[in-house]
Amino acid sequence: MNNQSVQALLQQFSLFKDLSNQEMVPIVNLAKYRQYREGSHIFMQDEPLENVYFIQEGTIKIYRTDLHGKEQIINILVSGQMFPHQGFFRNGNYPAHAQVLEDAKLIYIPIHLFEDFLTKNPQVCIKIFRILGDKIVDLQNRLEEQILHNTYEQIVSLLIRLANSHGKEIEKNVFIVKNHFTNRDLANMIGSSRETVNRTLNQLKKNKLLRVDAAGHFIINIEDLKGEIL
Image 1 (cartoon, rainbow, N blue to C red):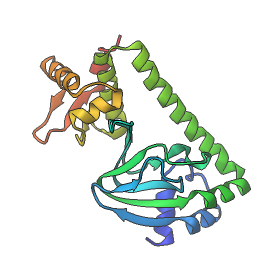
Image 2 (image 1 turned 180 degrees about the vertical axis):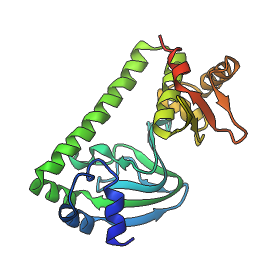
Image 3 (image 1 turned 30 degrees about the horizontal axis):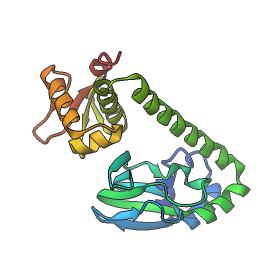
C-alpha cells in the first residue's frame, strides 16, 4: 500500500480522523502493512506486546484459553476496528490470541514508536482515552448482563450486540448478520454451553424473534429482541 492509501485507512478510525494531513505524516511513516490467511494467528496469548493493528479487510477473533485449553471468545473484529485496545499503554504480553477468521489485510504500528509519537502529540492521547473509555463501558455492560440477566437474556443481549456491531440494516430496526459464528462460538462469548445456545436459538426462531436465511445468516429485529430483556 502507498502512503496515501495507508492514511485513508487510518483516518477512518476515530483516533485519527480529526488529524490534519501534516499531523498524519509521521504516523503514516510508522505504519506497516501485511496480509494474513484464514486460520493463521496474528499473535498468541502471552507473547510480547509489540504492535497495534488496524483492520482494512477481514475478520479477526480475539480469544483466551485457560490452563485446560478451554476457549473464551473476547470479541470478533471486522474492517474498521483496531486491536488490542489496551496496547498503547500496557506493558507486558498480549492478553489474548488473535486469529484470522477470514483473509485479512492489516495495517500495524509498532507500539514503542507510536508511544514516542504520542508523548509529542497530546491531542492524540485524548482521543485514545475516549476510545478506551468506550471499551470500558462495553465491558461493564457485559458484566452487568452476566450478573443481572439469566442465560436466555444474555443470549438475546449478545444477538443485539452482534446486530449493532456486525450487522447490516436492511429495514428499520431489522439487521442481517453474516453468521461466521458457530453455536460454540456464541456460547464462549457469554460463558455458556453450546447446547444452551442451540436450544435458545431454536426457541427464538419458534417465537418468530429470529430468522435464519438460506445462507445461514441471522435476521434480527433488535426492537423485538429488546422486549425479551427484563
